[in-house]
Amino acid sequence: MRTEDQRSVTRLALGVTGVFSLGLFLGWPLAVIGAVFAALFLQAPAALPLAAFAKLFVFSIGLMFISFLLSSIFSPYPLVFLMLVAIGIILSFIWSVSGAGVLPGVIALMGALMIPNLVLQSQDLALVLVYWIPLNLLFAGFVSTLMFVLIPAEPQTAAQKKAVSQASFDPHRRIVRMSLVTVPFAMAFFISGASALLVLFFVALLSQQLAAMPAAGKTVAKAMLTANLLGAAVSIICYEINVIAPVILTPILLCFFFCLTLGALGKSQAPLAAAAGSAITTALIVYGGSVAPFSDEADVKSITRVLQVASAAFFVIVAYVVVDEFWPEKERQAPQ
Image (cartoon, rainbow, N blue to C red):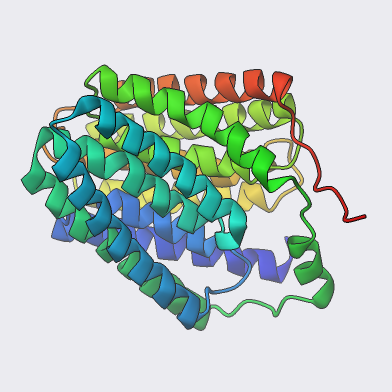
């Protein structure tokens, strides 16, 4: 493995485990989301610039408060409430596709999905979420920046930067495609009265990952399905080990081990390499949500969480394949 790849894997394992561990020790709300944010930051080739991170943090605060305010006002009116949720999802994709990126898109979808869902259950708990999503983002950003300072990354070459910026797609078509995938899931979730917040977070993450992949629908679906199966398998193994050794050091060591292992897999030439990054986030959501859950879900076992996440993944991935069949991705038309 190249030296830079070794550094990248070490940064990822130490940074994610650091956030995950402090979340367990301090018991702050939704610390699992902070660990996932750290994983997304640390899978990037370079640290997010301070100015960009400041804008992202301010954006997350404003978005969560606006979502809470609108959800609280319109929660007594189900039809209008659901219409606002659908509009919020579509606006999230517009924001992401306009150049904001995957992480801002995920935060926007969290505001469109998680805050409204929790408002229906408890406005007090929703207000806790309003504060703690940005705080988790802030802490994850601080830890990831620290990791890039302690373990510096090689500067990106001009060719690498050009390759990242050369993605060509029809933005309007992509917005319609991903809205057709995510909006039906959200409507079904809200109408059924479901309340699994981490499932909504997983769907927000999965939707953005699907939107960012330019390959054909069935190829993407196969890759994402593989990633989620791998992440689910890792989380079940970790949960069973945790049952055998129920001490706080166990989840910390397990988190470090699977981040290190999956990170190394992602840098290898193995067939599962492409699935490793998404598998890390899936494992963090499923396993982390089982050992440090939010609100009144403390009795949710890992296998239950796996079934919840698997059902959501199956719905979204199948919907993506169907939409791709009738409304495939196209490249941006060059100006005449």
